[in-house]
Image (cartoon, rainbow, N blue to C red; front, side, top):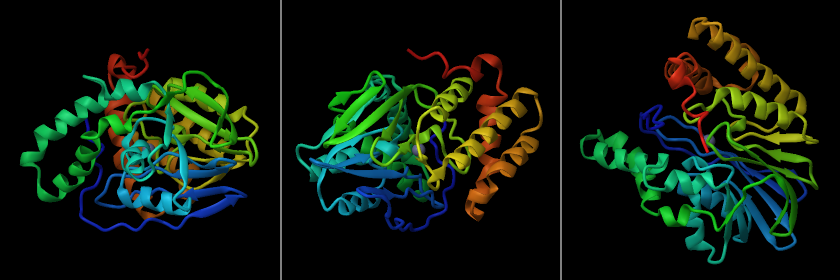
Length: 313
Ligand SMILES: [Zn+2]
């Protein structure tokens, strides 16, 4: 199992400034700097009972920025999925906001349970840490610290089915997919028309570490049918509907290219041609390496391996 450690040169990272997307809607952009694991985008929605935070980030600085943007008043958290860049901040947030309530899919508990993905990852970190080079060890310790607080990462309420949900007094429509992590929630904010989709949409590439690619294609079609005005991806800038459809066409072209057995580099070029306007130099540099890895381990792996994340309860 890969540790999602993509680049390892030491660097410092600044949290990007928050953006106001609509009345009572703030984006705290995630980051993916060299030498660190990523933080997902976080979205703050102001309801009649305080702020709802959608995804809590991984690094303390990101979660702190979100809490500060909410004026220290986060009443509820919804995690789109269990990847630590969207969920890790739960632990620190609970320490700062006693009484905060967390909603997430049942896949979070499954990932943290004995022999679940995060439990295996925790053991793998413990095994690898003593001999890891200092820079890599520092990155690994961030996740180890989070997983040592597993109880604080778990939700208080499980979202098992799609439908309306009011959190912190804000009215939402929530969808449930399984394509990326086994339990992927999307959230449509009724008042603003903003749709937060977690890692169902990501840049610089689709993050396929725990994905079922064909199910993902179907999930994107369902998202396309939602009445949203703007879409907040798990990683990358806010998208218009046309932007989302361009991203989606890139995703489909990537899968088709892989299915036809074409060379990963050729498929990476197809992908880049659809999404290049969103990529900075760092993102562009990552595309080939990340897609090459996903082609080897998933998209063009032997059939059994290719569908290993499609067999989930
Ligand atoms: Zn993510």
